[in-house]
Length: 96
Image (cartoon, rainbow, N blue to C red; front, side, top):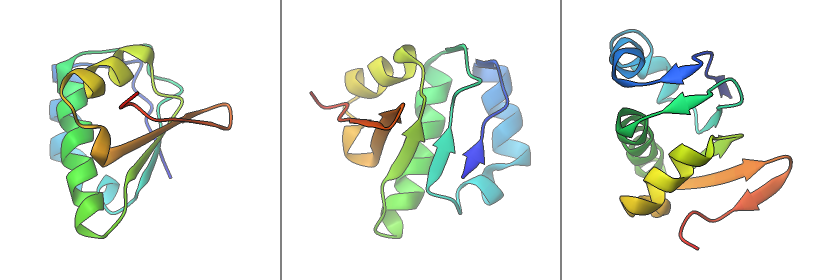
């Protein structure tokens, strides 16, 4: 599982992650977002690409402790088929 250590998952952070961590992160199918306090649509783009990478292996990206803003963006962009969200042991289907 990848632990995302960014408090803000915005365009600057996502650009850095894309350059420095993408290859390693995209090999994993679970991410903990507990330290992420805010995000923008760049975070949704990262999750979408990561989810596509997981789907290519027959998996879904498991997002633990994702901020509500990220869950909302995933819903808005209809990317729920790529992800599964869990918080405190609960499963949340972003398509609901």
